[in-house]
Image (cartoon, rainbow, N blue to C red):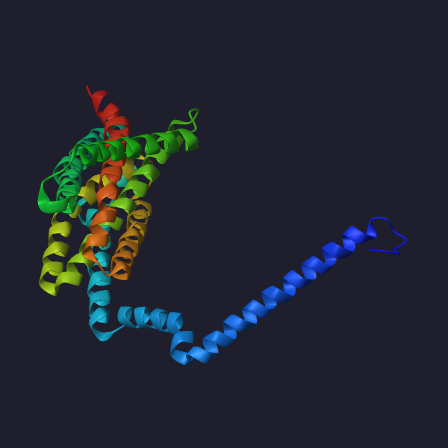
Length: 302
């Protein structure tokens, strides 16, 4: 500024004027945009709010409410199948298994658990993931090499993830802590598995109630033997009967979350895209538990 006693005051004053003008222009633009919205009418100004209210209204409509109830009940039934081992395994089994005589009985239960885990992987999870990727292929021409490789990579990712989790929380100095870590890893894999069951149940009820009921019964038929195997793994990890049952029931939350996710997407196709990578990832976790944690104990059997 001419006549200003401070030599740097000219530049500072110009910058101050520039920022003030910029702020006024931004405020004027904001006011203009608000005025433009007002001039377009309330329908244009509240379009976003109307879309949100319509989407929430569709989710909570009468027809969708029936789907919500059936899907949540079906997922809850699948989760409650974790209580079934209490009816099969004797009351005193939790304490007897710690004795030498009960160790042989535990080996039998672990053999059943190993077969259940491997059967769940190779007869249920991987074939279902294969079917999802085939149905998602354009034109129904079958899987491409890239889709096949992605399935294998997701299995390896699940295996390595559970390996990293065990190494992260493992205390190599305490054998009891090692077995407990394997029990918690099995609970994590079971929770993810129940999440996929909730997706399948809710996606089926989105199609029709008949298909939803059939899907729920099919999942229950294969899930009950699997839950017995999971229960044996928890007993091996040092939990008593009631603690193992409570932990099994806690995995039912994964099924409820899966059902809610499927209904909120409101599209079976969207569910299929999610399940296509969750299923092989869970398969890798079950393979790690079966081959790394359970099988070595069985190989020590005389």
